[in-house]
Length: 98
Image (tube, rainbow, N blue to C red):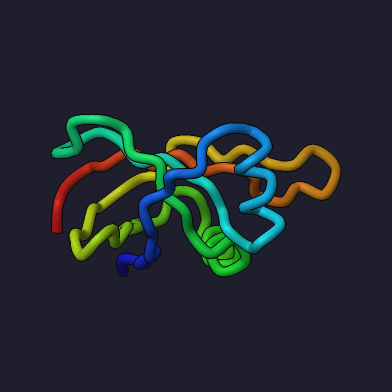
């Protein structure tokens, strides 16, 4: 079973802008590899993504839907907030197209 995560392109880059995104329930992330020529900054719904990944684990089969394209991905890294262990950033590596 593949779990879909819906993402949007992100233009806000930098520590302070990402902090404001998280305050607005947006999780900054990056996706790279496979058919993508360059790494892309993306954003996902923070609470939904955190809930889905915690329920299914880091090693589950995920699909990132980005601008109509679907990418089979694996989670490379999750960066956590040190005190409350909330998600701060996620890196996805493309393993294939769907």
